Image 1 (cartoon, one colour):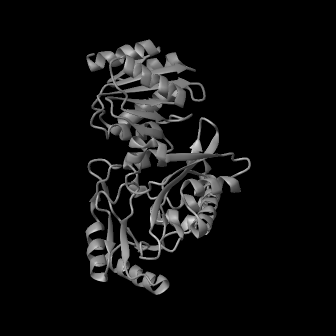
Image 2 (cartoon, rainbow, N blue to C red; image 1 turned 30 degrees about the vertical axis):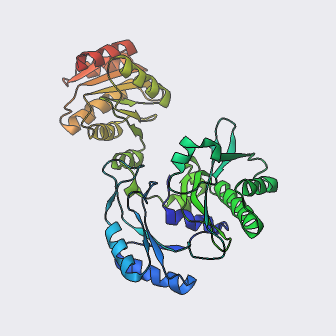
Image 3 (cartoon, rainbow, N blue to C red; image 1 turned 180 degrees about the vertical axis):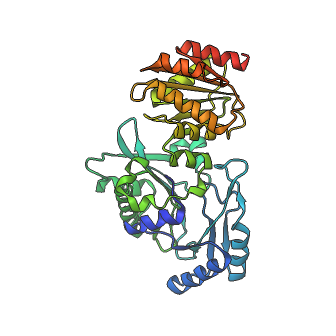
Length: 397
């Protein structure tokens, strides 16, 4: 589950991570009030208006604007709120901006120059350990840095059994070229950041940039946080931060119905029980000359209501030319699944694409007879090979 920048910073702040302070706003009036409060609390005389969407590269798309005065802040907030923001990490249609973060200007003049760094914390699955990735080249073009000058990207592996050690935090600060007060501040920063990562069961922290201010403070100017969905049962308060407006409506509908659904770009939809069987089914579709249009696992039950919901989700994709239902009747009997398919088909009224149903397991033969005798435009199959041939036939491959 992804979080907005303002939500991420609130979490970081609770763990002692120094952040660029800001207040979220949903309209221009709230933006003005936020700027006034920041001025009263921090003395800020200039502000940054930041679009709040689940995507990086907002600055490149015009979603981050500096506001040196109140008139400019009003103009920037008015322009950004409601816009369809297109960034390198969104689709071509972009994402609608529902709120903005009004943040203090932290690039103020001082005795020394400011410097931007890149820091992220994530799981290194190959080693089964956490990893801190960092670079002296923070800012909007970190992807370019990784591609062109990979030697400027460093990493530090952290054993989760012992956590981030002091010598590792100092090593990172040293490799970033810090010294004096900034060095000490960064050691505290990275230690608190790692503790926050572990504390909320995150799958990714990305802070880009981490800023060394002109007075040698170390702060998170931006923050991207992704939570491990499998650990949300331990963080009820964090689960409530989910913004469904940022997610694909089809994915939200599938999740609410208890379906495991991933949309793909093929032409043959599949409805399966069990992730392993779903993967095998997608292979069969590919071998039969088609391309899978989705991954859809209905789980251990496949009653009429769940099957009908799955049909409705599948049929929202205009690219679907056929549907393959592949159910193994172990936990659930095949005849019950067959009845669920028939009831769902009748409830929907019309399924405009060919439907192939392959049921194997308990009462499979009874289920096949039920499908064949239903009078519906449904092709039944027993073996995977037979199902594959049916797919090839309906596609004309």
